[in-house]
Length: 98
Image 1 (cartoon, one colour):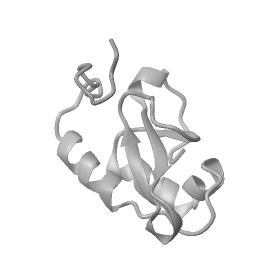
Image 2 (cartoon, helix red, strand yellow):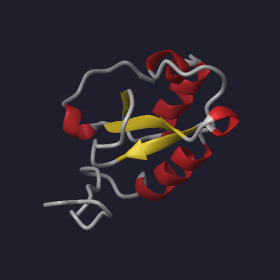
Image 3 (cartoon, helix red, strand yellow):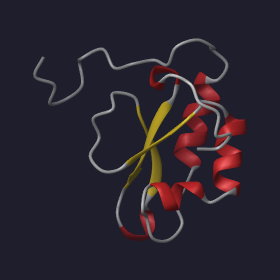
Image 4 (cartoon, helix red, strand yellow):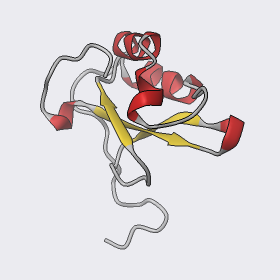
C-alpha cells in the first residue's frame, strides 16, 4: 500500500480497521482472520508513512473518516527491529478451534 512494490503475501502485514465510529483504528491482523476488509503493507514505518501520506488506508478499507494508526505504529516499532518473517499466532488465541 505504501511503497507499492510487489512481494509474496507472507512478507506483508495485513491491516484491518478495528473499533467503531470515531474510535476506528488500524489494527495488525497477524493471523489473517479478523473480520472486514484488509489492506497489506510491508511491516516497516517507512511503508506506513507513505500509505498514510497517500491516505491509502481509508480508500483500501473503505472506511469513512480518519483511522488512528497509533496501535499499528507501536506494533511496527516492536517488530521492525527483528527482521525476517512476520510473527504468526501460535493457535492459542481465544476462540481457536484447532
